[in-house]
Structures are given as structure tokens and as C-alpha cells.
Image 1 (spheres, helix red, strand yellow):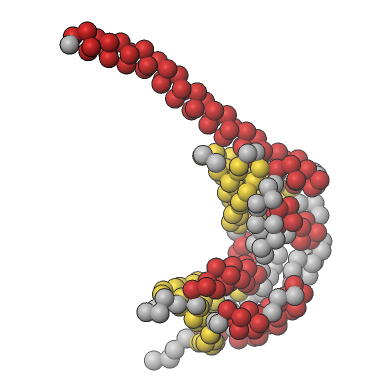
Image 2 (cartoon, rainbow, N blue to C red; image 1 turned 90 degrees about the horizontal axis):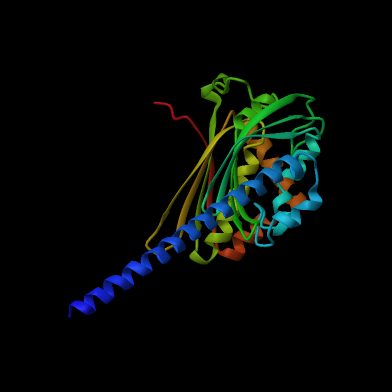
Length: 277
């Protein structure tokens, strides 16, 4: 019996170095991939974006990538940045930090640029501004497959003079809440949320916008009850925003009533003011 135990112990003793080497190799490979991913994102900003070498994008952006409007690959990746570069032709991104964890890379940056062209519905101002932002990229086999960008939108609008430097200067008694309540069947939730996300990004660029929020729950029929609340400086700002949203729909060829009907979505909408006691 002792000989059996001795044999087992010897087998384990011989196997441990192999396991340790295998684990170290795996960790080393993971670190190498993370470092390569960081280098890809650094190359993206310092060479591709700053030097406008967009022909290099197919090498680092996967066809799996989906842009905010649903377009795929390089087209989806450049959809948000192309209008920005057109309006701020001297724009430059300066990286302040890059962090890698697993298959994700977090980039913190500040971009600098002068608005010499119209950006969405904001005419050229000639103003030089700088905006802070954070982007999270997911990579697979050396290519970007997903990305999320968060920027200082309030700083962007105040820097261009679209909003007052102190947003509190907008008279409180004139501020209004534009509230939408949607009832969405389960089959249409994904498409509906994608459109809502695009709309919320767009209205943040419009004059008179202050803030927005969204709330949701599921009713007894498993339908999504989704409420959006957008705060505006006054009713005139809401009226202007409606016109600009309609113009954006027309420009992009999006049929909002058609989508609502096709997905079976019902909606209740209203402009609310502060209640008086």
C-alpha cells in the first residue's frame, strides 16, 4: 500500500511544475494580448484619428462592430466621428491614460478643436474648445468589436455658447418637462431601445436642452412601460427641438410613426410645467 501512495505522491510532484508552467504561460499570454490591445487603441487615436488615416480602420475595426445608428464595421465606427471632424477640422485627441482589463481597453482623453463648420443643428461659431471624454473598447483577435463613449456634453454646449455657462441662469419658472410614456410589446423592445438611445443622444446637442432621464418596468402582460423625461429651458426650446428632430428623421430617412405601428407601440406625450400650490 505504501508503494501505491509513494507512486501517487511522485506523480503529483512531477505534475505540479507542469501545471505551474501552464498557468504562467496562460497569464503571460493574457498580458501580451492586453498590451497589444492597448497599443491598438493608442494607434487608433494618435495615428488614425489625429492624422486622419481612415484607410487604416479596416485593420483595427471588426465587421462585428455596430454603430449607434445600427450600421456595421468601419461605417458604424465613423458615423459619430465624421460629422465632428467635418465641423472641427483641426480636432486632435490627446490621451491621458489607457487601462486594459481582459478584452477591454479604457481610454481617457481630451479633444481640442475649433468649430469652423456646422455640427448637426449648431451653426459654425469659430470657437476653440476642449472636451474631456472616456471610451471603453472591446477587442477580439486584434480588432475592435464594440465601443462606448461618454463625453462632457454640457461642457460641449456651453463651450460653443449654445447653453449659458451657468445652466442655472435659465429661469426655473419657465423650464418645462417633455414626458413620453411608451407601452412596448416584448418583440419590439430591442429595436425600440436602440432608437430611444439615438434620440437621447441627438436632443442633448440641441439649444435649450438641460437634462433627461429614462425609467422602465414590465406590466402584467410582460410589456415594457418606458418613460422618458427631458427638461428644457422653456416651451419655445421644446417647439424648436421637435422641428429639429423631425428634420433629422427626414434627413436620415427614419419613419417614427411607421416604426411605432409596425412594433405595436402606443405612446402618451405631454409638456409639463412646474405645478403651482
